[in-house]
Length: 389
Image 1 (tube, one colour):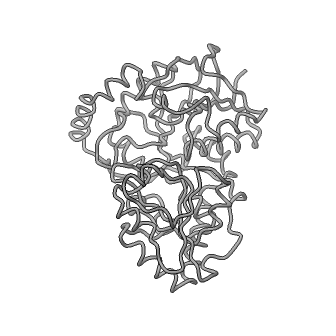
Image 2: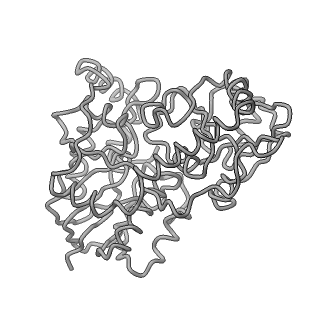
Image 3: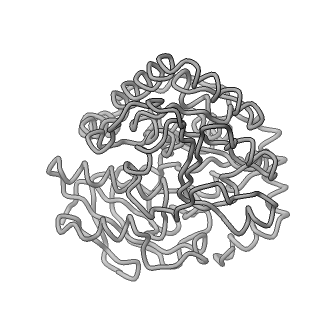
């Protein structure tokens, strides 16, 4: 059969990537489209338990979804194909898939440059490997303006969509059940995958990012506990939950302030957890490197400045609530799943809203130098051979 949409993805992805894909697919199915999921395996996730993450396991239970396992040799036909996460295809697929389509978009949930400026994948090579392993010539589809800036560094050697594909949310699932700063005790927290790169790189910065203040409590869901303890971070006064131990909306409804600072080597492509916190009515205090995505919807500071920011918010609860309401309204308007059909039609017709022009992240000379440096690293050679990290 000819599907309306086919999504190609390694189902072991968790966190923001899996949630974004599951939300898109659910919205398309609810709109009446025929949608398929081609489950592929990449050495990039060789160390992750399989066969699927919790989010993807839930998704494939939907009987409306056509699921094609990685070992299937069936040729799949679709009007539009979304290939999810470039690292999957940069590392290569363990088994090639046969797909027939005139429109293929490589959704860039991950930026090519790390926080330190080194390359973690090279888009030109990635495009070649997509064509080798799927038979498709992809158009790159960034999920944010910051991601577009990175990919612009490789244009015109890659085909880059004029429109972005930011995350969508079912805004009816998110909301505040209470007013923030409504009691003497202020709850500060964060949630996300327990990845050390999602955290600052020193014990002092981590403690400063989640400060222990008078009449405050700290709640964290998804924490690399052993790693933080080894760094010397004192966790005894934190309330700790495992990643996805409880529904994210319920967790976020406990918080007054959502804080997110991360490692110098990490590049945050979109920040789905931040958008979730905004939809839940939290005030967000963020790493300045993510300002390009959320603009004036949050407060930005270094970890050491967080305590002063929170004390100022405590002294001005009305201003804090006004910022939280404005952020929620803006994210709900920009990222509502009810826009899925208009966005899909605009994308496939080429008449969609064109992303603002932006300068490239790196010059051609810098790109060449970084590519050569990556080629010298063993990880590049191993990925070219199609083996794990």
